[in-house]
Length: 202
Image (cartoon, rainbow, N blue to C red; front, side, top):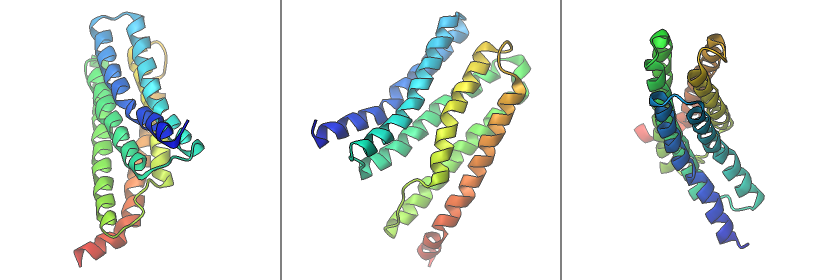
């Protein structure tokens, strides 16, 4: 298999995140109105597959030595699609449960923070690109992504099987950890790109 075919496969895996997250949204909503267990299983499976695409696209790109600037730009975009579809879906699901009103508020803060953080980092990278900076994700950004996908799966399982499976305290703890990581990431990226921000303002 030549390098072009390998790049096509890697990019297909990357962009494959989109149909699976949209499918998750549809299946999760279907489970609400048709509460059969298989809808929840199908939604969880779709969400897990979407999460795995983030693991395997980078792994295949490195294994086949086809890492590209296009892939480096596409992967964060697909991550944003994941967040923009999955977290609002989880928020909607929580909002439908009367005993999860406070939890829905936490998820609202969680979701807004994720979206604002991504917009801010995108802005910082754009400023850095003006000065030919290395705009790849740093280790904290990669860790944030790697942690967010499985936690999203756990939160959905909690919602779909509530209150019979996972304790609410565990879900709150996971969400709190991700909120801290998000805030930490904002600080780290801002410090990393501060020289370029200063240069652009002069």
